[in-house]
Length: 94
Length: 322
Length: 90
Length: 87
Image 1 (cartoon, chains in turn brown, orange, purple, cyan):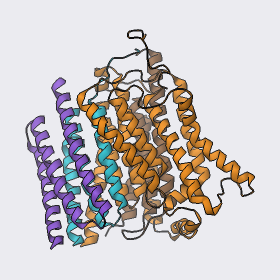
Image 2 (cartoon, chains in turn blue, green, yellow, red):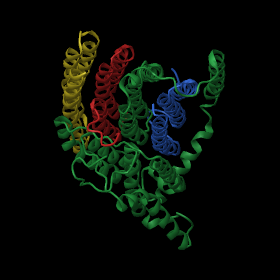
Image 3 (tube, chains in turn brown, purple, yellow, red):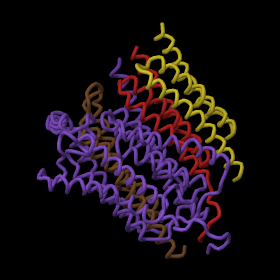
């Protein structure tokens, strides 16, 4: 059968690539932020897939802790990005 | 039979993830992009649960499926409606069609390289080493949940710095000014929803904080749940989102870092080294730090959502607002 | 015996989820789809949770499951209401 | 018996993916929100099944949190800003 870690790891890489491409190419700022978040989820997925050791054994807690902090930082960074965008909009008067 | 079922489940979840991510990046309007992204966060929480990462799943369920969605949807609300329907071209663009192709090709090449590394490097025996170390030191940490042990004992520095990052982001947002002055209309369904949802959220946050010592849960999850309670209050028409004002609010903002630094200095002056707790009290100290970290995280996330501090004076004469 | 009842309830719950999804795909307009959605939300979820409650090891887990069911019921009622109201306005 | 639960899990995941089709293809955001709502309950059910199969009671807490917070997105979606105090 397919190795679970490899399957999710590859999906993580694919998501990160999709997110990164859209981060570079997307003109609209809010969607750029979405793309950055999707890229982040891809990287988290790669890390959690690396930590996974099978359906019956406990996974690696160090990587889980890292991802946990990553999620909180990602949401605060997104909020900062949105605030910057709002400010820019106010300033342009558009 | 069972491995086959697991593979089916995995493939279905992976399809859902990629489908939603692609659709979110491609949807015609921003609003639809955001809804698809919320659904993506939900499926992500499922994937964390399936990969035996309950701590991460809890945080994702609270933040990815709840807070980020509310944050993004509320950001759209202040825009003119036709603008949110048709995506505007106002950001930076990279040189034309050929630039587009070049970026796509190079990103794909990098992804293929990393994918190759994943394919051949995943089953490396090295990866279990840190987990083994955590397992053998767990009983010294004062808690029995390994993730909490890593976050608040073994790598407490990281968590302290993370709280600093959160505070930095918050200060950035507050210094930009001009936050979300609009508040929501009062509506009977939202009000009744608030009536039972807010107490339940606060209760669950308390439970998560307490249970984090020996089972998945902890300060981040509890903080996110408390923040969600604030967001619900705001959505139901309370401009303050349940936050205190003035000095109390600012003390709460820095309380997480404050208690961490106090503990660190205390253990340092006691000759043990920065943030090296005495083993006998480690459990209690961790709970104390987590309590303040929860409050700080909750206040920070609510303020990130609001975009500005609630105004100091609540009672203003009607119609006097500019 | 209990195991069989529980399995039956879980499978029945899943069947309601399947029918709810089919309804979402096939029914003509938003309000019909809302109707299909509430079927799978309330019944499917209820049966599933009842089945799982029969299997739970301790009382706390069983109570949590019950709480989740009540939550999903109330939340989906409120959400359907809000969505219907919203689409009526616009 | 875990085989039956596993089967139920796979069927739930399949309905989840099938339910995504109208979500990705539809053009109205209200309908997307509706599908997201179904996705939420479906996800809660799936996580509860996983909790039983993987024997991880902590996942019940995840389902609880998901059930609590799934409705917030709907509220945020349907709210219109009220009296704007400042422009």
